[in-house]
Image (tube, rainbow, N blue to C red; front, side, top):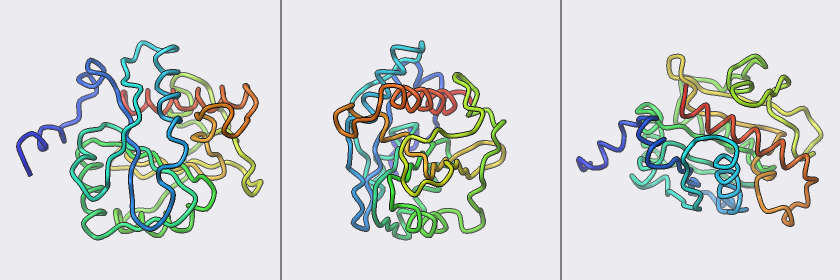
Length: 215
């Protein structure tokens, strides 16, 4: 690993706050549509820019899990409807990224759950996804979400849930199920969500970005 890449591992919230916070879409193998709805991150970061003093880079970029590109970004966003497949080296790289300060947000876009729960065990075989309590700081840091993640899309009609994996006290991986905030971030004509629902999803995204920078 080069010195440049190594330095990028030493994530520092203040540095990213100065240069501009950026989210990278995580490209993974397995056949799932990791690339769907690319306007989401751009719209979210523009919303963050408009409603906070956080400096952002509202551009769509992706980082392949099989490369060291993931180390360039403080936050990775993973979504899709299908199968996820992490190789041994992919899982090792993701664990290293998370241990060194990175953050992974995973949003089930309907159909990802079974595959993701299996593959995340390759990253942290000794840890379980745990549901975050409704009083957890992520749900209240900027906007108040007293019931946890918002219900943006119906999916199977189950209650929305937010799960996490921690290293020490730091949340390093957050997973939303039956919630799907990511769909609410995209251009309005894509899913035709009502403005109030899109606003709810974007506000939740502000909480996510703020939590990454401050926890």
